[in-house]
Image (cartoon, rainbow, N blue to C red; front, top):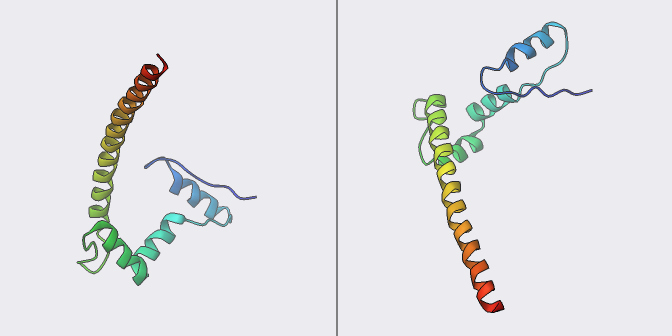
Length: 105
């Protein structure tokens, strides 16, 4: 049997995994693995720099707080972009319906 632990920030995922460890249940932590890869894999480090457009490793290790800040900015941007697309395409859809109805007359 395999079990996945999911939840929001501060929901207790780490605490549950610690209990499993104490009980001798093997736990794979994707967060820990991601931290390890982002700190040690040169290819990943270069890709992070290229994707973010900034050197988050200038201090010698990943600036996690800065990365979190970028993530928050990106979420806000994506939300606004989706609102813009929704506005635009709902109006295009309405225009298409009206054009179709005009040609049906």
